[in-house]
Image 1 (cartoon, rainbow, N blue to C red):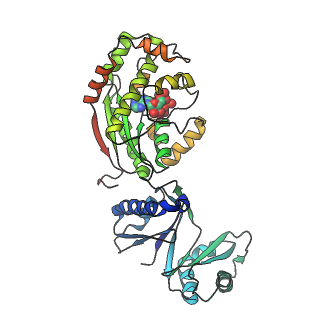
Image 2 (image 1 turned 90 degrees about the vertical axis):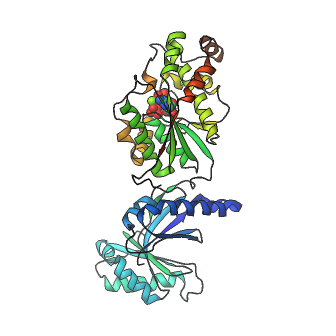
Length: 396
Ligand code: ATP
Ligand code: MG
């Protein structure tokens, strides 16, 4: 075991009485996540997660990459454990970090001693190790203010650990500590980002997708399933509920005034999403709505679409610019799939002049000829449930 990962907990540390529950959840999530990469021991001590490969077969690089998308971790580093002895610490640094150090123009050593029985203070450790390294690497200057490279030494309970600079973690809260929500997932750029953002707050995600065959194609459906799979990299496995929406859209087309088509359709989506969500224990909905982006995303429009449900609707993108959304979409890896050119059911029967300032009274009047309940029940009967996991082998 000559390399392990140390991961620092984020906001969890602040959660007082719930801390234990949060840590347990995080440990469980990391264990589940690591399974795909071989045998790893995962434990938490002093607000730090230790991920330890247990044999030579473990895919350490794959596991390391996966650790970057686990919510609840603010930073992580790969490190070399060694005996709590100053010579052993120095040798470990030479072996493990010597080459990195040689590539830098300047360096410093930063030490932390949580095991107070260790005879040297943190400052004394840094001075001793820094001095030896400076002598052994004469081309690399010591610079304690703006070093190009920092060597870290941590003297902890079980061992000492040496490592280079940490990398940022996924942040957020461990998946599962914040309940469960149902995301309305389209094939666009926005909704996968919205799902990711709420998942980041510790919420388990389920998805619902409305599908209007033959107006929208099998390829459009596959694209949505792929987007869901990409989100599971962060959120963990989810169920995507595919709802046949053709009949509802045709009923709207045949019975309602055109300017209200999109709004009526969205009211159906919300209501159906809430009903399926309740079956799955979801206590909120998530959409990728964004103020002013399209006609159905004005305050008035959101009021009439939100009026059909009684759970909170989370719209994490509501105040963002498109560019900011695209940046996140690229970061989480959904962008390239989102821009594949398949149509969404929202673009079928789009009104030429959609109402941007509707009232609830107008909507109720516009829906008069529809048997909403019968249409909703029929759509619910058609739901196809697909479990989506990140890896082909079915893990995570
Ligand atoms: P997106 O990029 O997420 O498609 P958008 O900017 O295209 O969003 P709309 O098409 O108005 O906006 O949709 C707003 C929100 O409604 C979406 O973000 C998504 O949450 C939901 N939505 C739209 N179409 C569907 C669909 N076919 N199935 C499920 N949810 C949908
Ligand atoms: Mg869309």
